[in-house]
Length: 147
Image (cartoon, rainbow, N blue to C red; front, side):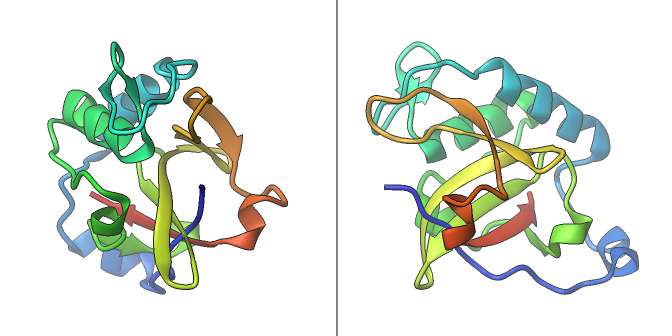
C-alpha cells in the first residue's frame, strides 16, 4: 500500500537558510541523479540494494548513503519526522517526500524536481518516477523535509 504523511511546515526561505541541513546543494544533485538512475530496479519488501531490489525506505536509505553519505532511518514511520520540515514552496531536488493518510506515514520517495519523485511503489513493481499531483497521490497528505 502507498500513502502519504505529515503536514509541511510554513517556515520562510530566510529561516531555512539559517537552519542546519546535512544535505547541501551539491549533495542534493548527487542524490537526485543517483535516484533517477535506479528507476527500473525491482521492488522487494525489505530490499535495500540495487542487486536485491528496494522497498521505499530501503531505496531512500541507499540513495542518501551513496549520493550524500547521510544515514537515514530505515522505516517510513521514522522518516516521517526525519530532517528539516519544509513548506512545499521551499522544496528542492534531493528532498524527502513522505505520504500519509490519517496521520500514518505509509510511503516515501525522493523529490527530483518539476513536481516529480522517485520511489519504490509496491510488490511486483519497479522503482519509478511519478508526479506528486496525480489523482492517486492527491488522496494523501504530502510532507517534504530536508535531511
